[in-house]
Amino acid sequence: MSERTAKDAIKKIAKREGKSESEIRQEMEKAIMIGFLNKGTRNMWDNLFGVGKLPSPEEFITVLSMNVGKKKKWDKKAYF
Image (cartoon, rainbow, N blue to C red):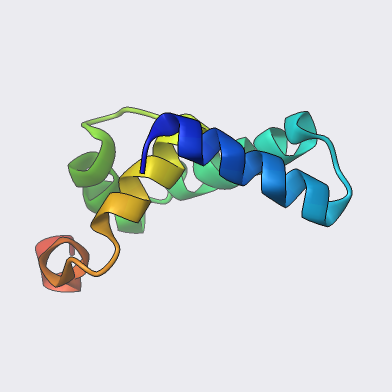
């Protein structure tokens, strides 16, 4: 998935939820920060996005969409 496709996904979510794209981005940024700060999943975040890197909502969508279904990437043993 490209960054453009991720932006389109945010646009569609905003329309579906009756919110602005800005509101959806803010909600996603808040959720991303919560996940980023979770010490229990830090190793997984570092592997997906780079050590200490906080992804944008578009990058988050893009990276996760590329890794969905890749069992090795999501194998808990690899992260915990």
